[in-house]
Length: 544
Image (cartoon, rainbow, N blue to C red):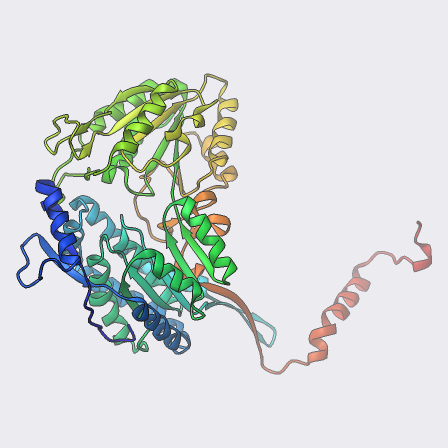
């Protein structure tokens, strides 16, 4: 913080995730004893891969003060420096350290394939296409006679970011685009996975900011408990915006606190993404995309959470999906083809599954806990990818797994009631638009009429994917953001560089007459109107 490293008497220790598979209790017990000071850290076992200093309240407040001091000076830097140059340097440094970042993500529990996916998303976020788009949004200029007219976005000031425990590193880097807008940034490295956040911001982002001459305090990173740190942010007069990742229930309440305190809340909450599969869809590719629902054992906010399928192809889709699921397996995070992660507390999974089956859903596959070798075991720390079939759109949301995000590997597939295609299309659009959440939506269809209907009428969600991976990253497009319970009342596609800045209009004249600026347009209108009007109407000729 303030451009300097600060020591602490309190530490958060990071346990190698692969060791948790051998003896989770012993590893977590060691971590707890170290953090409580019951064991001295003089000789750490190989299972401890790192530690991060824990901040107290004065340290948190000092970070906010450093950010407030840096914000005005950093905002005055040219857009070409803080956006284009920073973006170029970040992209280069992330590319150079991609393998190292991937190893840290794996050590924190991300399967190797998903760690690489996250790194690719970071690179896309700072890619030349995306940076060019940001620049075009941040500043536009037009000519009008002797005037230069500018539409520009100005930074809000001090931005605080609370990343989620399931994807903290990539979420923290997403927040770095707010620095490119001209804000200073304070990031909380979460206690559950602080190492990747601290490493990338300290070893990648900090040197970039120093290279371009950003003032100390432009970036500040502290690790600590969420509740007291969020309260410090809300209470601080230095803070302008708070980016909050968390559950919808907690996020909506936090939004109210922010507004009452005069802060701008930028929320990234739960998702309950809908995928529609029409009767002419490529079912093999659609099934392949639906398996993304089980990546990370469903503990990613942006995966498919429910499927709505045309009744003509429902059986074919289920059969293909079950075949594809056979390739998704558990294991140690460093193994090449592992996509399932441990679920240490699975009681909610079984409760949700029972609810679905009790309400008439059919179990298509899965439904059990298992060990890393895929042996079914009630004591296993992995869950089988599970698909339940719900018959009928009418009443589908009475099933908990359909109405709300589940956050484990349970995918409900809703088969619509048979009806004429025009009726079904209307129902599918209405169903998607009536979702209380709104992160991402997907459609699989070949018909241009169906595709055009969804493009014209789907209003929810921060992203709409058509005949494409649901979670794949693309240039220009946002990685986060949504409507409803996903983004709160201000929810939309989340480009932090835009969400943490505000519009301002500018006119720069070379010497226009003020009176002409006020009255000239009306006089010109009258002159042009008198030349073009075919007849005039006397005021006394008006009829009541």
